[in-house]
Length: 119
Image 1 (cartoon, rainbow, N blue to C red):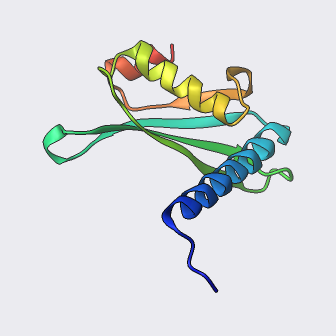
Image 2 (cartoon, rainbow, N blue to C red):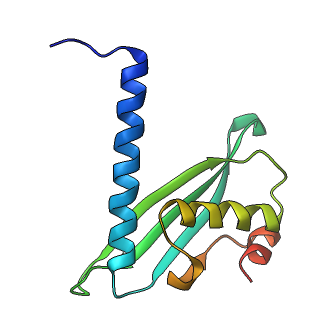
């Protein structure tokens, strides 16, 4: 078996990521239930980098269990304003073929920017 080079490995990982995103998006869209989303900002030690983490929570088709998917971990490039957080969240939903009509609720911490992003 030949070991793939860096380019081939990168292409394979990109392909598998797209397939996984399509599978998760299809599952969430096909659910008869709306999704709840968890959104939080994490910062590295020394506050050099910040990330917006987004998870989706939806009841299974039979309504007996909750499925949780880690949708995205986005490095934040701008100030953590409410508008920027909401825009980043919306872009992640689009990546999975979702929109805010499929959203039941968004759960965040009590930071003013997070509250204003989802009012």
